[in-house]
Length: 180
Image (cartoon, one colour):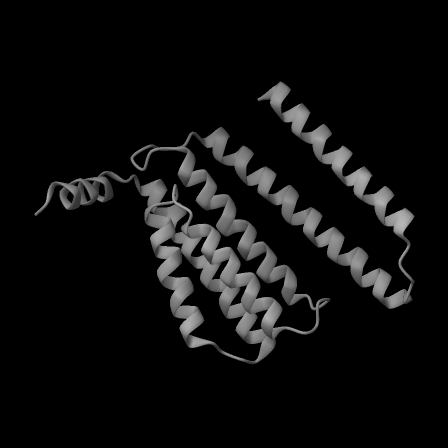
């Protein structure tokens, strides 16, 4: 065996059980988002599912590479290309799947594979992910409400809402840096 292959095998062998669990969640969330897209669209793309499975496994094994970016692109490209109803509740399933994939991959990339992440760090990471998921649901609910009222768009209100969102995100970020 070459030294590179042996180092790769040693790295896999040294990976902690917690890291393997995160890897499983990462793969399952990407594959789940792909399956959800197929269910809602009624069109299965077997090759796309194969690509997502292979790329998500590769990303789980090496979360520090850009493989995850390719998965997100494939997931959204598949969604945009096959689903016509942008207000379907299935968009939440796919969005949360992408969020969980991104969050777990980012978390895995921040620590060595053999490391065990402290419980408080995991809880903080999960809480922040849950806040993003909740915000996603709230934005979807607002979009559904606007659609049911058939309101015309208003550039001034849209701009003001964007400013409020950016200010809120900056405030949360600043507070997390002060506490963190």
